[in-house]
Image (cartoon, rainbow, N blue to C red; front, side):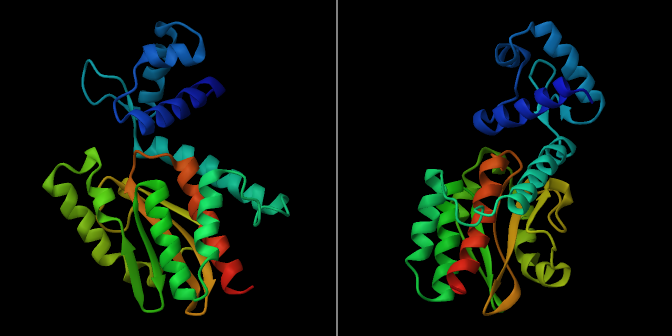
Length: 244
């Protein structure tokens, strides 16, 4: 894959997250200051590689799970690098959503209240469903957010999401994801593979377990850069507040 193809793929992902409609060559040509024909040629190559697809003959392109995975991998590497090299990463709260998250969590004095507040804040800030493990229980909030998304108009998709949520707690306890930020995209999800959702979770230490989890569940079409950062910071903030 060339650098330009990678940039076009990432632009398709980000535009699709914003607009919820297939992204056409005209839109991308404006972003890259080149002809639509040039963009179409690169899109054909990206489609052949399996990173994008064309839902209808006359439509633009949308990312595939493989395209999202390539994009998310680059974001995970960036987050890991920033944590490893920036001594202030755990306390920097430059953007407004992260500051809002910190303010709400820091107002709580009990661990369970802090965790619930963090989940509710993620729901409000990301527009996704939020979840966290609290001891032997799992706290879930934001069903209305999730099912208001255009992806979930079909009954079968809603049922697949329900199946995933029914099994999420035992799966987390069994698998115990090891990365600081973990992303399971679409068919990568352990159950509910047809649900067309992505699970983004961060582990953190709490009085209940060294492997507690907080995160969000939303459509594969979402702003991964923003959501992954918020979820990771939520995990970091909970550890800092609980053990300060």
